[in-house]
Length: 100
Image 1 (cartoon, rainbow, N blue to C red):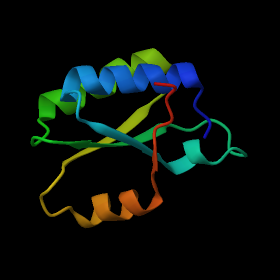
Image 2: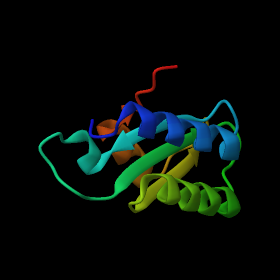
Image 3: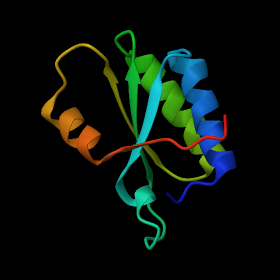
Image 4: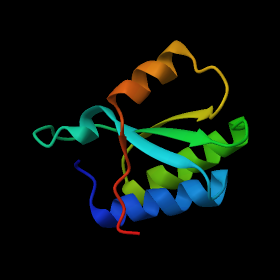
């Protein structure tokens, strides 16, 4: 994974502040490829409650400011049928690595 432990901790902190402490953060896309360069940060956030548009926008803006690169955020509620996109992303994603 091409995120540093400091970046991972900042992402995790932001997600839990916006979506609640039970939110799970997964990374997918080019950030999982150690040979890749550049690119945006693709994140899947799984939440207990239905994520709102406001939460998605706030989390995206905050993370883009923290990381100084574009963030592509997909958020979905656990326990409800997932869209085809969320199912595909889940199959390729890895849990965000943090030291906590």
